[in-house]
Image 1 (tube, chains in turn cyan, green):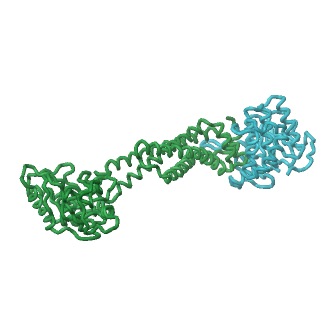
Image 2 (image 1 turned 180 degrees about the vertical axis):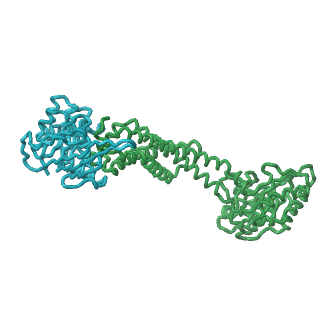
Image 3 (image 1 turned 135 degrees about the horizontal axis):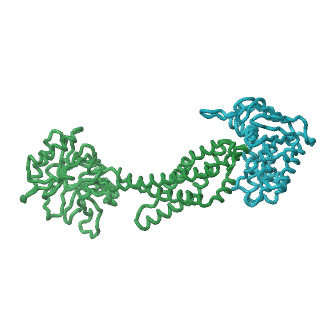
Length: 236
Length: 404
């Protein structure tokens, strides 16, 4: 599903080269729930932005759903982000000027989907996260947990092949975090491939597999799954 | 395609949206009316006189001293001018087109009529007048030297023969048979129409009947007159310098005013329409400044919004928006604001025009100008927002992962 081989990301200035990722290798299979952990500045967020095609990389190879992405132009990368990837951000990243319904609709509009289908998908996704009754509310009128659920609904509405979560519970209190985590586990059980970046070992422990990143490299790639959830079917 | 969410977002930015829409509305209202005035003034400035205005020099002359009879002096001066090497022809007159001063009277067909008659300007001249002015005789004949009469200041001007313009002829004789008919320009003085010229305008620029002109073969015995000179091609500058010298050499007892004494016809035209030209320039500057301020306002607000929504743009990009989607988002947003602005602006423009029509007797604004204004303001809005929108489209999707 997601395979990076000898991947490197270098930030260059006139006097210094800084490796954010160096000889980075990872292979996430379809239906896996992988937690990427590591201390601050280790490169895990850089990995996530490259995995989500938000940034380009400097060297190596990255295959996403069988497609080598380094040669893709900006429009093709946008299309892949829109159709294959669902993002869940730490800060929720809902658009404050739009209500819940319109927020979930954003990626669907960029797909050029017809209004009736969009509406159906939005309501299904909101039902899925238990917020269908809040469709007309604005983000500011919701709790942090509810906002993250809306963000998850937005990620799910487009039926992505891969869910990328960046510290999805980082801005939530324990109770809300637990609710969001349970939702992610439920989504995974239904067959979604999830890659979650977190620095919280407790949260990481709930993933199927952990990948530890230090100084831009994967240092401990455990092949043994810690969580034996069996994906039902491949998510399409 | 993104209209509904854009409208939703705009509802939450009411202040900026209303201010820009209002600015566009006011700009449209003022610019439409100002451009209409500019166009009207330019139309006035470009009105033709019926003359061939190239190679014409006008000299304003005042004899000093108190001679008994000015006529011999005038005749002698005209001969002096005609004998100059660069001169094609010349004559002496009381007035000419665009002079902004002259004589007028009412033309009657019935000598006993108490009605006012058809208003006409009066130009005095002789058999050299038509050639000097360069007007086209379309019916009848020119004056002959023997037909030129002398009129004293205390007399009402009149001559047995006159040449009139086509427009005047058609007004006095709507059936079209003016040639050979008799009209009365002064009580008891019949004048036969011996010729009709295609077009010649009155001395003033504000008249309702610009083309009502009568030419009389008259030498008016006055110390104040104008010499009109047609120069040979390419000789205008030389005659402009030589003619006053020749007149002074012939007789120093005269004043040719320093400022407007000797003028080419281009100078006469420029002077006549100075106020119109000034108004057209002023209105154009006002339009330019207003449009620039509006464009700057749009650029400013759009840039501010782009800066404010950087993170949001990054999120949209992360969710699959292409650069062109972001560009079109901001362009569409501006278009919607401008559309509201121009709708209000159209109402204001028509209202302002109606107000000026009522209070200043100005013409009503042509809807063509409203249409042009609407298109111009929408285009201006799109042009002004393009650079900020382009900047927005270049925001990287990675912006979505950065903390604010």
